[in-house]
Length: 348
Image (cartoon, rainbow, N blue to C red):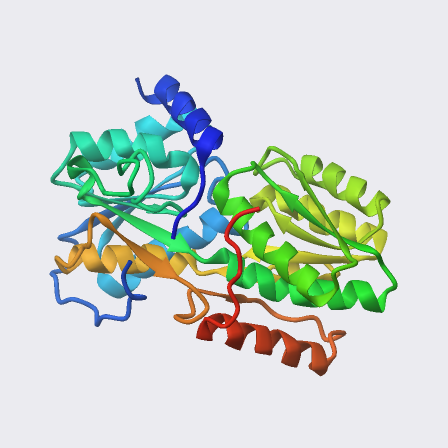
């Protein structure tokens, strides 16, 4: 899966310089490696392990590996970008044989450590190894990064499905717009919104899709403010794509008595008026990478790709107010995506 990163990646690399100086969905049987003989580490991004979504769900994958595979685990939380390098240092110092970076923002830091420690395996969520800094301009993985595996997610596919329900609900309520509240404008955020916008327009070309960013993944008040702006412009449904910050979007939707859509995990219980959620199984990605590395089957220099077909992507609980006919329509879109009949864009 490829993303156009451009200036965004350049900015991330510049930030890291200050701080630091396609395979199948996993389903192999658990290996018989002796308990405690393998250590895996997970370094969170600035969303922290308490974000009720993206990072917290990866922590679930790490904990599942501990209980099911018997590995020793290190959960290293980054409270700011200045924690990235120290957390990688700690993981290496404590003997981690696999270090998983919990997101796009950690790519430059991971590249630094993967090059420095070629005998350690590294994986990264929401980043393909066929992009800089891990590859050349043609997408060929550089020799220094053959120990890195990308954990990539076709979030555009689930974004499409929630977009179908958003469009139908907006139509029902006589609205002329739906909205998306993004966190930081990076490819793993925009891929969700791209699928959402595309399928909203497929259902009703007349609907306006409002897209704004909070530039934050943590502060709920920032997302709440952006959400209120979109509500003032007539949005009847808001899709939050901003991690913990996005809980402020769901709160704003509740207050305005419109509908919110969760992201990454099933956020049905995180607000009163959640239509559904776009689900990304980052817990499975972390677990599969650990299982591979522990069993000696780690596929560095390639990506694990998760999508609707292999259940790496999905949707959460659907509000009972949604008619069965809408769900049938959404399932038709899902079938067309899986079959390849419907091609959903990955970028805005």
